[in-house]
Length: 343
Image (cartoon, rainbow, N blue to C red; front, side, top):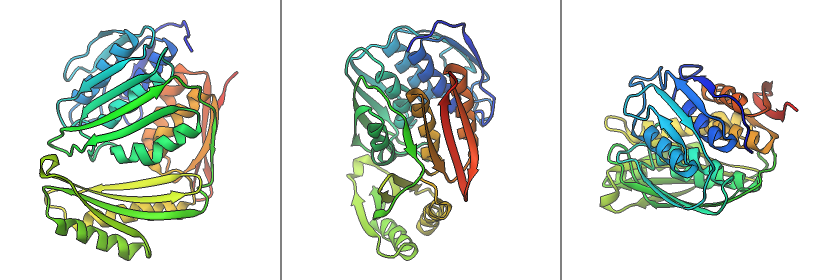
């Protein structure tokens, strides 16, 4: 999927102005072989420029594609990447903070589907970070859809790493794959509802209070408290899972100092109710993570409950690298996103 075109210039302040612009550009640059220059990285964030997790994603991209890089330094707001050939292999990267493992994984995994050989990828850092999808979300919600599209991949959570301590680890096994379009406009019948409250070096009473709120909100839901070893904490996460015929959605809340267990649970319950009321297949965060694989597959469509700035910005970056057009149109109480080749 190599395309010999000029360097693409990207404004890192466009749209929502966050790290997703950089991550999508890294992924697409590797896959298409197209160099890019980005200015204004994370310009709209409280701490603009590159953080440790972004530097790890850049390091990973450079390593697997033999890329030349300029500007990869802490707080840098500009970067140039000139990729080479994507190579399979056994890779290990450490963020060194509670920066998100999952965001690094999502930057690199799609590129490894286009590698010359199978790969193993291990990333250490934060696995449960309020600013990113947790590892559970990738494993239960995102990965099954990628497999339906033809991706050969496995994900394993080896150790939890909560914010702010980090120390978690996730491993992926990937093989070269040919992606096919996905149609995901209906979620299908409900098969199971599950709620899991995870605690590590946090009183078990916190988990019980969270699950009591969830049980009041969703009659008949299966609940579970999972107590992790003290060494994996301190941390608390509440996972609310809906297994539907066509899609599994996972809503997550994180315990924070000064925020009651009931408040954490209420927020998760309200997010799930909004998705259920919309009738759409994908929640807001899953929608953000579907557009790039669909574009790589050459097309597809899905419905979502929200048209986020992340989604619109991601689409804008994708259209710079790939010959696809994305339409986001109202559909019932939500939105329909369709992607098609421009050819």
